[in-house]
Amino acid sequence: MTYSEYMRGDEVTLGVAPTGYRHSTDVNDALPVEPESVATQVYESVALGATVAHLHGRDGDGVPDPARLPAFGRAVRELCGHEVLLEYAAGPDAPLGDFLDALDAAPTPDLVTVRLGPTQSGYRSVAETSRRDTERLVEAALDRGITPNLLVTGGSDSHELARLCQESLLPDPPVVTLQLGAPSGAVGSPLSLLALLDSVPESAHCFVRATGPNQYPLTAMAFFMGAHPMVGMADNLFFDPDTPVERNAQLVRTMAQLAQRSLRSLASVESARRRLAVPAALTEDTDVEA
Image 1 (cartoon, rainbow, N blue to C red):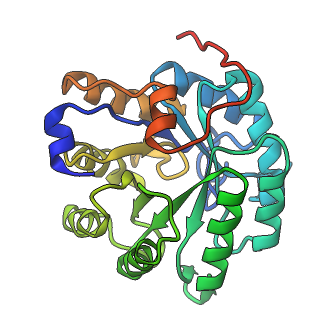
Image 2 (cartoon, rainbow, N blue to C red):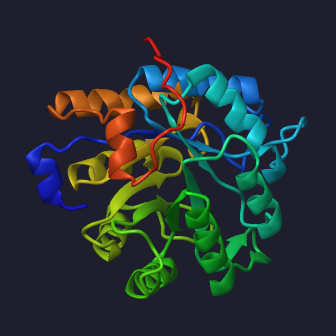
């Protein structure tokens, strides 16, 4: 991931994160929290060029629940086939065992988010993620043919990323996601983005996410630095204080248009699969029409 990738006009891998774990419909009632509604919004995003769907599980009341990840994955697979890569993620308080159980249920995801280090939620709650937990999840993912995606939210995570690379515990090239504006993470600013980008191995396939109003400017800035944008209502529920986002496709469309205006192509799912070192799908792809 370098500026030269942008200058060469390399393809862009566009991701969508349709629903997260921090907010629910009490903040924006348009946020999808059911498997079918998430799948529909992923389908709309795929039609615009997204090739990776970053999924969180929620129960019937919309509360985050990693055990529900397979239900969301099945809904997306049924509607989108293999035209999109599935990435499973869980909040910092999710037990590792529950997350591993979700990886063993059908469908098997293509990628899995791996958190690094302790994560603070609120003022007093800190979810500990030990090095052993991180290594167990990376090992479990690779054993299952799943590509680990290392989540970096600040400087301490960058140190752990460097350690994992030095100890050859990650695939080459590694897949990394930088998230700006996360609780206890790096502030959402251009300087923070540049500092985190500088810590990512040049060979890495790097996604960038940002929260709230920082989403578009920072993912756009990362785009011009050779990174790959991941946008969606998991991180951003409002265009401005008075205008809620109504569909994830609105956010995906802005990045697709940016790529088009910059004369860069969006990667197909087959190209994204190769670039992310994801094993080939075992079943035939299903076409998704715009």
